[in-house]
Length: 215
Ligand code: AP5
Ligand code: MG
Ligand code: ZN
Image 1 (cartoon, protein in one colour):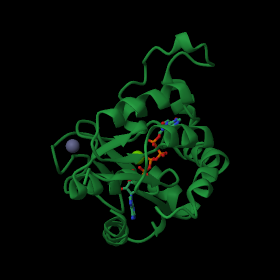
Image 2 (cartoon, helix red, strand yellow):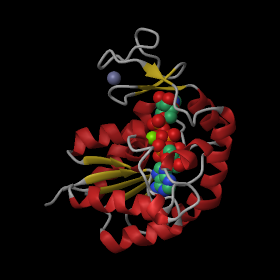
Image 3 (tube, helix red, strand yellow):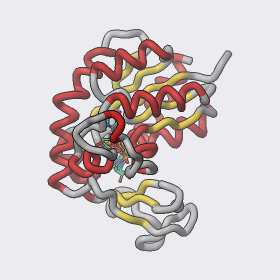
Image 4 (cartoon, protein in one colour):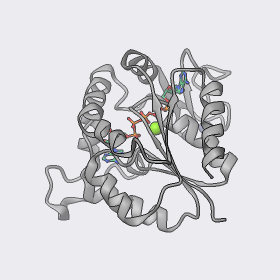
């Protein structure tokens, strides 16, 4: 059988990145994430698309969605080059969901469910390794030495969109644009909701079992 096609849905801070790393290792698939791809190309020139802004940076720093034309292209290229994948951070609106539907088929659609106040605490306390991208949390998942990555020794930094004001806007954008995407998949055989408010290990146990059942 070819490698599984897994979609991980959930609001900002639900643990998509944290759990995607484990999925990629366990099921030997590519981690495809539009957020990381855009952060690595924040100043990419998109002026030829004649949109409101000329680079992704302005959208991301305001907590708004980067236009579909940009992200659809990123995902199309990434999926063409992956055998199996875990897709994280896409689709984020119904047009993206329909586009995805036209280019691939999904074996598992897992939605991580977490309450809003918990999300704000997770995001404002998150720290990310500047070198390898590993995720930490000052309280919930602290590194062994303050400000230093356990995996590679890199410096831990705060993401520019993890201030409380931008976090609240990202959560609003999620409710408005991305919640309908979850409703779009609900009821499909591949769909499963996971309680994302448990510890990372407990979330992983539920997620791994749900994926094993479907692939
Ligand atoms: P993106 O990078 O995708 O951000 P996001 O969806 O807001 O999600 P996050 O990465 O913030 O959260 P996560 O679910 O990965 O949580 P994590 O595992 O880190 O997108 C950023 C921006 O890019 C968007 O705002 C937009 O501008 C643009 N963009 C991206 N995709 C786009 C698209 N498709 N269309 C248009 N624009 C797009 O965990 C969070 C924290 O909690 C960490 O500190 C972690 O250690 C901790 N934690 C994790 N799990 C647990 C747990 N179980 N218990 C306690 N703490 C936990
Ligand atoms: Mg993430
Ligand atoms: Zn690191």
